[in-house]
Length: 246
Image (cartoon, rainbow, N blue to C red; front, top):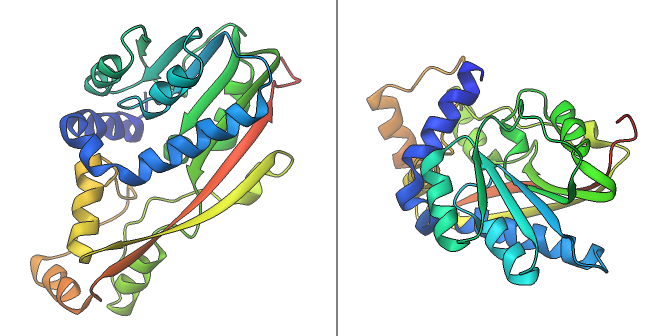
């Protein structure tokens, strides 16, 4: 596992206990992702893989709709997997690196919510995951793309500060797949609440070259930020068939 992915996994692992209370956006996106898969399948999938399952938002929704399916969850954060098993007792869990793991093509459905944007080569990861599908299987994933957190970026730019925002991928790298883009705008009471929400959910990983602000500059930034503070989440939903290269 690379340094960055290892660091990200540790952040999410530490966030497990308080994650569900803070992850309302993640829960909403996971629910929509599963709903898109439900609409696509006329026959119930028998084997489902949840990649980067976290505390199990996706696995729980899939199990509720397809109770007879065998659901496997993989995540690099063991504390998150424990939370997922509490929601779905029959869930098969695997602790591991979602970018490096190998599976035989045994899944009818692969799901992944809010994971792909954390990986250094998201398009390659998507193609790799498609190889785990049965011939008529499908993959559904949701991720953040460019344009997310633009309000925070603009606020920092006005003070000539490096915003540190994680380098979300462009939607263009997924040309050729069925995609749907959705912009969610969430209002937080203050910018401090937004930043705290990121930290509480483990999603506060900055770019590797980011240098933290001084206390004085952060205070000035917090003081002049609008209240409430709106934040854009630019979400891309992808539907992909099995890889033809496997």
